[in-house]
Amino acid sequence: MSYKKCESCGMPIPRGIYCRHCVDENGNLQLFDERLNKLMHWMLSHNPELTPNDAKTKAKLYMSSMPAWKDHPNLI
Image (cartoon, rainbow, N blue to C red):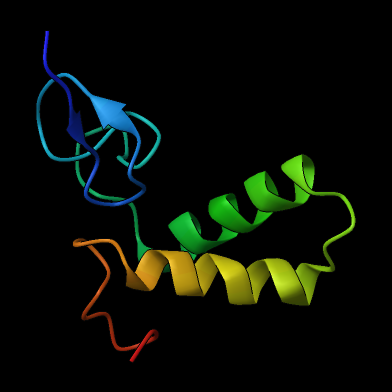
């Protein structure tokens, strides 16, 4: 089976454009602030020496490289 990447976070997925972590209960892409917050918390849990501000900066930088967010006004 070949995998694509989620256009929001880059996670490998078998089909679709977004992974289950990036969509709401209706299958729609979560709002920017929700995804940013979840990515920040993920980064903090995997890299405890980061400060919340550093995690937010890194999360925004990473999101700016993803097709779903690259043109978002909060990242330009």
